[in-house]
Image (cartoon, rainbow, N blue to C red; front, side, top):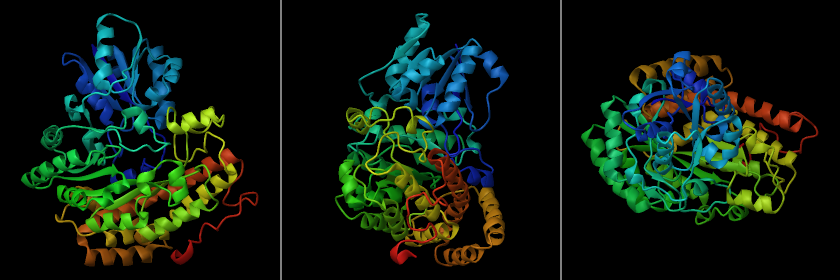
Length: 532
């Protein structure tokens, strides 16, 4: 069997980092770990070609060569995903699909013409697909209510990747999350009992990347890396020894719940193992909203204090925030903005709440007859689609707060100041290369381009850029790559806020930043309270 695996294109999103990739001469942030894991699960005798359309398109020769096309997608990739299904069908190819998007909404893939739906987790459903192929079945939907033992998962086919086109490589240690946040689809996809690989299994994956020549950042894609704290500590202790023996070839980034701040040992182990940053789902500083959405782990201790502890341990913080929770009071966006300024989080991801299919929120809103199933999340899958349900306060008010808050947070001088604050707040790492790593050539290119773009062309912030760069170079030279990387990423967010403005304006019918009909809020160029 000749199989062509294709990963659809992403549109411009918060996480696409388009301008940043352009500056570095790269194509994409991360490779599709799920697809190269699927490739490793296919029979050894099958011929496999892989194409990430975010790097380069497939060729006519690829289409002519293959017998079967396998696609995977997240919600944000839906447009290209459906177009690829239809192209494959028109070319007379059998199409198999899987991944988070078709698993959540399988009927849409069927409507586009997919023949085989390999849903849920591939370790259990790919064997069903292979049996169907062997038996000559022309179609099928393969699901499993059980969750696989991830210690049986193979090493992903990293060799299929054009590795020098990505900013980071990725691995996975665990699946599932022990918490019960109402809006989150992770527990519906992967369950509430975190399942982990064995430390030796994860080290073997890192060794494969090392042997292939990768040096740089590895993103651990777990939705909550610390969901099983006992097992993650086992991994980290062995990872520390492996990193020492290999002269620290990687730096690591991951996602975790904010109760990470409560475990000093875990924080220390992560930093010793080479982690330089962590993404936290903070969502909102409003305690009432946290209780409404059942994110109780964020109510156990003051959120700003938890962020300071994580910084002091040596980790950079990325974070997600959401507007639109039930019962939310007016001004929630400004309170998020104030929190971001207090903690110095450089790249806050702000989104409007979406009811994702099969979540507890989706079920509740459906029962309350508040779902607008033809809109919102099914439109773009990005953070700036307005909610796909009837909220408890005016949608125009939420949309205006969202756009004004996003606009203010990514005003260039505010953004640069947070990058600077964060780098000064983080404790120095125990190893010089334990912040964001870039190959020397790309680091030099980044430095030169930034000095030209932000140190000369940006008249309003160039003095700020040079002053901050001087302080970082004098006080924390090991954070120089990190600071420059954060500054460069700011160019993407400057562009992204314009995209968000256009999308929100199209959905509302007016521009909240200029229209008198918008809900009156704090002007976007004014920060809250003592942060002005």
